[in-house]
Image 1 (tube, rainbow, N blue to C red):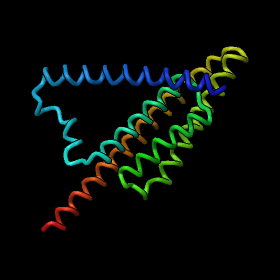
Image 2: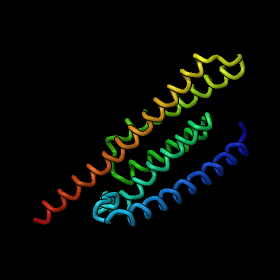
Image 3: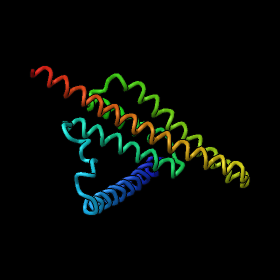
Image 4: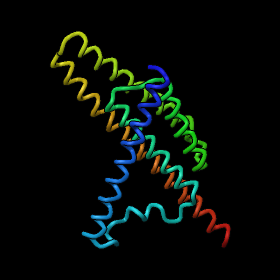
Length: 176
């Protein structure tokens, strides 16, 4: 895969991400009209967060979308790995979550390696002749990897929220 193919695929990812965000915005607006605003607590996550923490939150979400997009396309190469690493490292730096950088980098390597292995399995299935059992294994592994991506995203977001809560509590204690 050459650089122009990678850039073309990243433009495709950008389009998918924008469409996803538009759908998410419309859905949240419809839900807020259907239910009272007090029942929807999604925006409550961002209360008492500074801009760096919100940026970190966004970088983790973008990385999640990117990895799911790679999983759906069965594509992974070193440029995508570097892109994902940059997003996660920047996220940890902005959140001042320095203790988790090594764990998150290892997690990104595992996630990208799993996408690469799934791509190899998909290529094998379709080049050597379709095998129903291998196809079922491929589908189950894709579902498992998707759930792992979701788990690691929520683990990272929870870590940021806890860190922000601890920082705000320590600031309150200092003021007292």
